[in-house]
Amino acid sequence: MYHVPRRYAILGDVHANLVALEAVLADCREQGVTNYACVGDLVGYNAQPIPCLDRIRELCGPNVVVGNHDFVCSRPDPLLGFHPLAKAVVLWTREQLDSERAEYLRSLPETRTVETFMMVHATLDDPLSWGYVFDKLEAEVSFSYQMAPVCFYGHSHVPTAFEKAGIVRGGLYRNLLITPGRKYLINVGSVGQPRDGDPRAAYAIYDLAANTVELRRIPYDIAAAQKLIRDAGLPEQAAARLAQGR
Image 1 (spheres, one colour):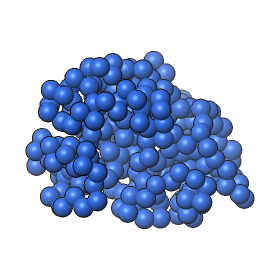
Image 2 (cartoon, one colour):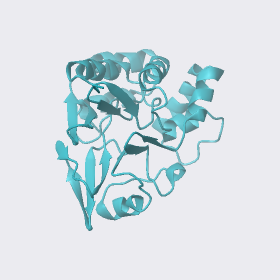
Image 3 (cartoon, one colour):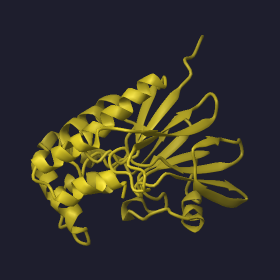
């Protein structure tokens, strides 16, 4: 039987930015993507939580894990320690979500295995503590809990990759060859709010047949996304930072 080569678009940190998401999905179609998965944070920061949630749900099916904004936006818990900007948008987003969509976000798992790879939003050792993986020491901890050759994650909005082959190496990446016998922990960047100084949307394509991961950067209409934020009455900082990639 002939099998269609599987090319996964790994999306993350969409953060209710529909303009960026649609630009990314257009690129996915051009790149021959066959499957979709998401490492969480469908909502928060931007002004289109409902269409972004619905679109990810439609495309990814069960291949989604919960992010910290998904978690707090779908629960009435106090927002202790949240930045005032993030808190303002969380409170607004809670008002936008109906009970069914909130329940969907509450139902998302902390981790998930899809075919041969894992996904988590933050760290594998304690996913709901929402820790960050920025360096080799932090990656080493997650590697101890990684039960697949490749794990994709998000949360920091900075696309970095770590490889464990005895020692741990890592840093920024564009193209990776997945070598058998090694482990890889790969941040796919952010669709909706990049923070690496590049305002273009980011996502990754994992080609399971070629064993490659490619980071894609996609320009989108930032001004249109900013207008949606301002029209919704959300904080100006949420709009301004999109143009800065910070």
